Amino acid sequence: MSYLVVNAGSSSLKMALFGRVRGGALVRHLRAFVDYHDTPARLHLCDAEGRLRRETDLPDGPERLPAALERVLATCEDSAGGAALTAVGHRVVHGGTRFAAPVRIDSASLAALETLVPLAPQHQPHNLAGIRTIARLHPPLAQVACFDTAFHRSQPMVAQRFALPRHWFEQGVRRYGFHGLSYEYIAGRLHAIDPAAARGRVIVAHLGHGASLCALDAGRSVATSMGFSTLDGLPMGTRCGALDAGVLLYLLQQAGQSVGDIDDMLYNRSGLLGVSGLSDDMRALLASDTPQAAEAVALFVHRCVCEIGAMAAALGGVDALVFTGGIGEHAGPIRDRILAALAWLGVAIDRAANAADALRISTRDSAVRAWVIPTDEEQQIARHCERLIAADGTA
Image 1: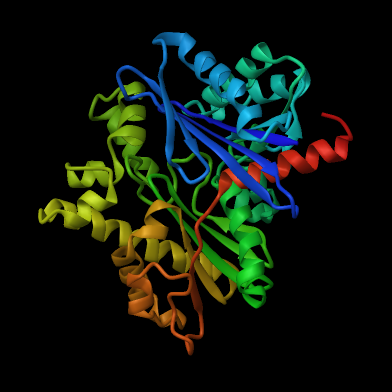
Image 2: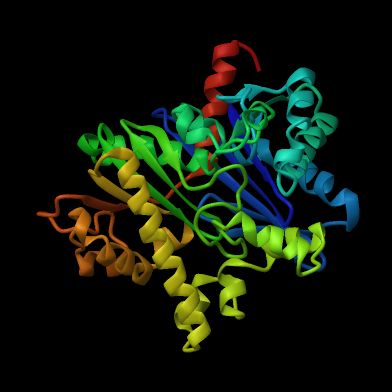
């Protein structure tokens, strides 16, 4: 059996093929991606290590997604050593309150997911377009939706509420949290790496172009920095992070900004890009000698430190910190600055290990252990796909 994982977004399409090999391991056979910013858009097919095997130009417009998926589907059987494609697992950003676990997609579940589009208008339509396209290209193929919000449904109700009139909560205005597939994967990996910490209190920092934190108590999410939308919490590549609601009222009422203008600014022109005026890429900011770039980096670190403090308060203490995501896994100077500011928590950084992007970056006598663990949301989706199909007893 083999499983295709699809992450259909607004600016890119990412895919990976997984299958079981002799010995039982679930391994990646194929990677594929399309960057919609490229002109023309091009499908890149790579091997499991990311080495390019083939490139194919794609048509412009609405046929781009079907063309890419059709070509990847045609490649799957050869790439998996002849194993039949069993199912397709999709990353779906929003599962609302109904979906607290992966679900086999049928007409009823797809209709329910459509109703959640207003909660995630930047992401959900693209996720669902991938599902509909696979259904049209290969109707018998089983499909599974895996949700970024589901992992956080374990949070206590007090962590999910805003201090708004109660009827808004019942209508879905609540803290959902995101990056759940990443946090779920990290929680599983930590059990193998540091079992004692995994049974205790852990803060995971998923730091990338999108960034958030999650407080884990015995592997369960009890608090997270993102809330109703993917705008909340930490500053990100182009997103603002936590923002006083009064700013929005001011922009609407006094500055003459339209809802569309504000939407574009908050999602696409804020964060590291907005503060630096240079780039949304942390690597470029760390390499820059401009004061604006330095200020963007300092703000990112400051907000991470403050939010980690909030996560520690929610947990009542910390046994371990985990860094993941593009910045978390590769930006040693950012980890160094964050951990130096958290010495009061009892974490002592091993600077040589940190500079080498080692697995453990805290000293052996550190009261709080610090780890760098690469995330793998695609593999987590493949695992969910396999479990759900096995539970159903049918492909």
